[in-house]
Image (tube, rainbow, N blue to C red; front, top):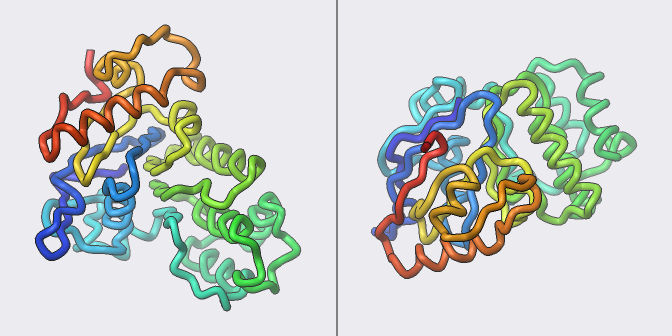
Length: 260
């Protein structure tokens, strides 16, 4: 389970993330969408224990991310937008480290990298790979083992169509294993196809939150009840972001995923 309870983050008096509450249940996928600087990465970094919140509390698998950081990270898969791993790192070395931490057999690690098309690059450094290949390596390692929560920050960055399909497949597999999944993305097709609920963020504020049909209702966009992968999500997104900017720091109607 992933949980945020009135978490906020400020830098020198500037509010990067206004108080935000969210629960992501096992087997559920929630997406964060919004313009650059909306607070998506800040939210994920707080949950991953990479930065401390200025207030509020957050939990991964029932463990407080500040008070029990090591326990919270133990079964957490995290793919940051810019992995903080030196480019001189050898792929085999970081893979071996992840295997030890996650208590995963090397055969599973090798299979994961092979599926990512990088099984023959174990002796290469990250700097010797393209941006897309590095992203594939980090995704393969982030989803290893019995993770209970998965955080993905713009996982499609630098990826071609095959790589993007790998991201979608990784999310679906993690969901099938019962992981709670929270991801940030500008790829609205993936958001529509994968997310059970969506949080729309503008300037650090969650301006709307809920399942896509409910967001369409809030945005005043006709919804025909069609396939999730083919809704008018672009129009819904643009409408809610524009309203959020107009409203300033005030929230729009908060739509919850369990609303009638």
